[in-house]
Image (cartoon, rainbow, N blue to C red; front, side, top):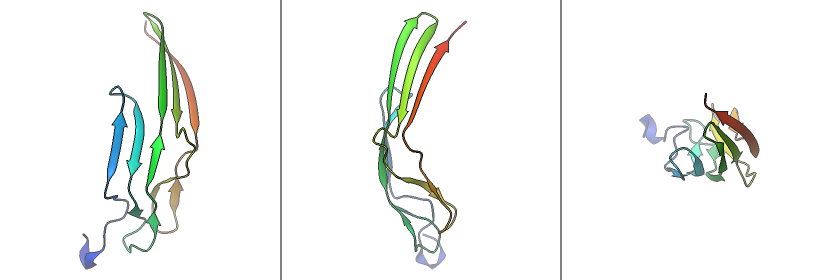
Length: 101
């Protein structure tokens, strides 16, 4: 707690991750948190689900597909005060070819 008994901003009570292979975050949960130290605006908690798939082409190449925010949920990442609130990203899809040489 801060002076005056208020909770700090941008500091949720709970953050939890589920990771499938040590590299890929597949589920992120964050509890409600305050936008500023005055504790008047609350950023709602959320659960964001991601997905990843890998395909080994050969010994030197791997094809990778990542989807972030699979359910296209609206969420808020952080805030710099009560009126400067940053929304989370909408669904994002990335494809990559990773090679070694």
